[in-house]
Amino acid sequence: MRDTTSDPDTDAHDLLHRLAQHRTGLAAASFAESTVAPIPLETVVVPLMVGHPRRALTIALAIWLGCLAGAALFYGIGLWLADPVVRPALAALGLEQDFAEMTDRLGTDGLFWTVFLVSFSPVPMQLATLGAGAAGGNVVSFLAVIALSRGLRYFGLAILAQIVGPRIARAGVPKRVLIPAMIGLLAVVWGISRLV
Image 1 (tube, rainbow, N blue to C red):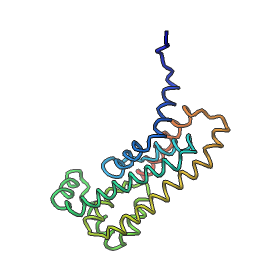
Image 2 (cartoon, rainbow, N blue to C red; image 1 turned 90 degrees about the horizontal axis):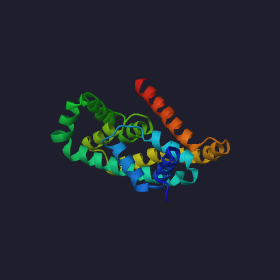
Image 3 (tube, one colour; image 1 turned 90 degrees about the vertical axis):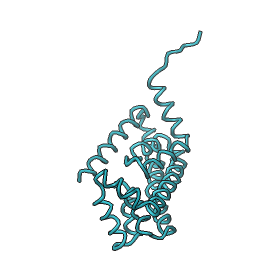
Image 4 (cartoon, rainbow, N blue to C red; image 1 turned 120 degrees about the vertical axis):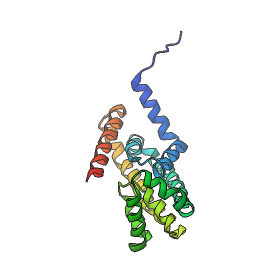
């Protein structure tokens, strides 16, 4: 007779292992983060990268591609639907002033540096992607700056995870402890950065 009971630690490890291998799901999560879900994706992917250092670059590639797709979509929405959809929706959310400031920054500081700094920082980049489209910024420059800034961010994290991950594994820290602890730490850091 087969044992139908399951070990919660094994189940959690299996779930994390499957997530680390599931590039489509990671790309979809990154797409959501760059469009409608202003949550820090790093709180999930950094622990996955550290826990699975050999897959870190694959994880980085998946989330990078998802981010590019989401940014391109929001650029298009900002370009074609700024007045009928974007501005009323942001007004309803109380973000109209922030959007106006972002659009002004895109015009005065330039598309490249504004989007670069926003997409490299912990600030949600949805306003920058919508604003770049609404301001009619050059789409090739926009996609290049997103590719560069998020590429530096994601692939830099992957390389760091490849360096740190094996050292943590040699230290004997179990993944069932390491990954939730890192998620918690990153969530706290993200929360503090939002308050500052």
